[in-house]
Image 1: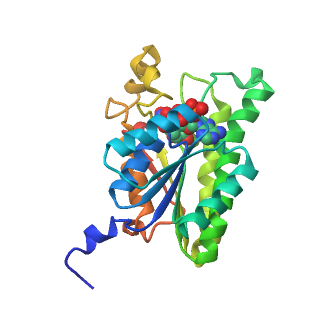
Image 2: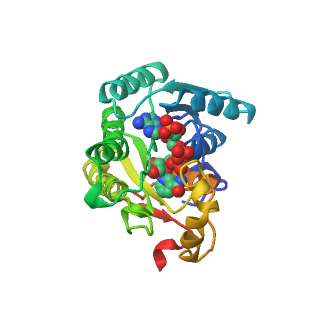
Length: 262
Ligand code: NDP
């Protein structure tokens, strides 16, 4: 039962292939770095070709050799399906999916929310996560193993203030429950599905807010009195993707500097 080195082993993903959406920068890029450091071949996908190019170069400069990159918009279900088919065929399997691509804003009151703003945020943040889980999950179910990590948000648990973002909050709550629903369906077939729910993280999405006037309000509501770094979310993603999390499925791990305590 107890073996020397067994815990180090649990946190490794040697020989596995990981596909990360929104992987060109921010949390997605850090997740790719974390998974690559733990031994995985990584494929970063992003709709932003320039971010993708720079992100891939960053990973290579960090010493990672097995880094692929593809332009992909997760709202295009056909393209997501083709990506899943292609990479599974190329590498034999995609063992880990990080469904991370997401957008936030604009700050819009519910009563004046433009149709387009609602549709766009739901399309990327909820539909895109579902297409990714379904298309990559099918292959995992066929092989009887796989680990999916979705990126939700504390906004799926609380309603942020002072910004008004019903579209974003609703989409992230949807991601959490989608995660639990797929986890329940797929658990007997060897595929684990978990989520991380970050608080305010210093990336392109929230960095300027954290350093601006609104950030003072956010940090005042945060027990740790600071925002998070993207690598602090990548650590959780790595954990959920590895055998160290072998008993976890349908979990939503909140990593928010304590924001949701208050
Ligand atoms: P970033 O904006 O830094 O990175 C997100 C990446 O996803 C960008 O490169 C973006 O490209 C890409 N992307 C957006 N839409 C699509 C799409 N349709 N298809 C493919 N790629 C897309 O943000 P973060 O790293 O901070 O966010 C990552 C995830 O973490 C998101 O799901 C976000 O909601 C979640 N999160 C972030 C928090 C934060 O405070 N930063 C807090 C809680 C959750 P483009 O430049 O074209 O938009």
